[in-house]
Length: 286
Image 1 (tube, rainbow, N blue to C red):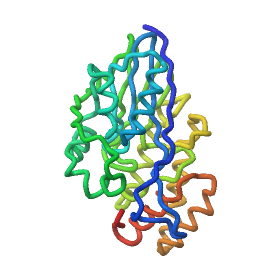
Image 2: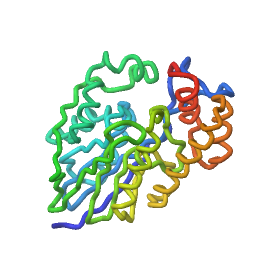
Image 3: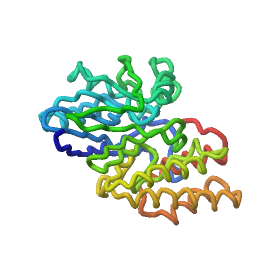
Image 4: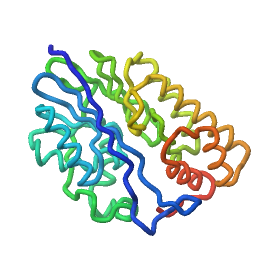
């Protein structure tokens, strides 16, 4: 068994197409920064959550190539398209790599399996910028992944910012690649959190905390911040603050301004505004 290391590439915020939803002050919305994690040994590597546009996936590929490692597997933590739609770009360079996910994640990915299924949302926000090649996914079981004698274990945690989310646990590094269960310095995506979703998210955070990780990589993070396990608690406090404000039956603007005042250090208020409209004014149009 060789010693493993890990590195994180944070794709900067991505501008959305003009003519789509703007912030209340008229500023255009952007997509939150996305974390891609490379776990590697002496020769091989596992890549976790490639970003979703052709250009950003190429940037990740150039970063991976500088390490000189061979990507053998690409693990997807959950089915949201921003964490896997760019996989075909990586597979062109590493054609023998296998895309792995749990059965729950695979089912959600299947819902975005064709360009037509992506049209109403992704092609509106990012027209012509997303790969169209299919992504074949192999389901990973409880045995997890193997990297140069080390085990990497998917931990199914249920609902966080979406359904059937997972964390990739690397015991030898005490590393939890947390996908969208943990957010680090970025406003949370709460558009799918109604109907008990925030309570389920807290339970998911409890599962991550129980791992006892020394390093926690958030799926969306401020690139200036470390991979701090304390972000588990910070994510929970954000959910608690959201619940407290929502109990007062605010307007979308009142909720938005209230959360901004409570969490001024977090980046990308656009995802906060989208959540406010989703929770308090019905489903917004992208």
